[in-house]
View (tube, rainbow, N blue to C red):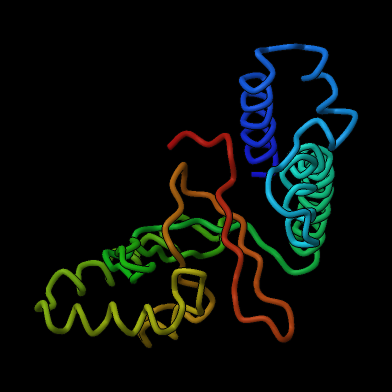
Amino acid sequence: MSFVAAAAGVGMNLFQLGSASDWNWSLIERYFLSADAIEFTGSRSGRSEIWRFLYVWGPVVLIPLGIILLIVHFATKGNKGAQLFADFQQRGWVGRQRSLGLSAQNGNRPAPLALVGPAAAPDGYVDEPALQFGSWTASLDKKALKALSAAATKANAIKGAPAQAIHENLPADMIVAAEQKGGELVVVIPPAAGVKDYRVLMISGQNA
C-alpha cells in the first residue's frame, strides 16, 4: 500500500512540477534535492509549512517505508511458518476429512463442514460416522437443520471444534472444521493452553 501511495504521490508531484516548469528537467531534478522546488502561495504559517513539507517529501519517504514494511512482512511470515511447524511437532496430527452435509455461517456465507479424524485409522473409521451423520441431517426439516447449523456456528466449527460439541453422536476423538479444498488429508493443530481455535490446514500436492 505504501508503494502505491508513494508512486501516486511522486507521479502527481512530478506532473504538477513538470507542467509548471514547462517540463524543464533541471527544475524537476531539484524536486528530489530541495523542498523549495515547489512553492506554495499564501501565508507561510506553521500549518502551511507542515503541509508543504508533507506534500513534497511525503511520497519520497513512503518508498523506503514500504521497503521496510515489506522486509518486516517476509520476516514475520517466516517466523510464523517456523512457529506453525513447531506447534505441529508438539501437538499436531494428520487427519482425514469427510463432508458432514452441514454448514456453518462464515460471516454472511455458509461454509461446508467436515468431520476430521486420524488419517492413520483403519478404512471407514472416519467415513462411516460422517456418512451416518450426513444421512441424518438430510432427513431433517429446514427448521431443525437451521438450528443445528446455528449451533455449529456458535461452537466456532469454522475454526475447528470437538465433534461432540457439534452433536453428541459424533465421535469424541474427532473434530469438525470448515472443509478444506484440495484433497482429503489435512494437518490439525489443537489449540495451546489459553487459546480456543484449532488450526486445520490442507496438505498441498494431493490429487483432489
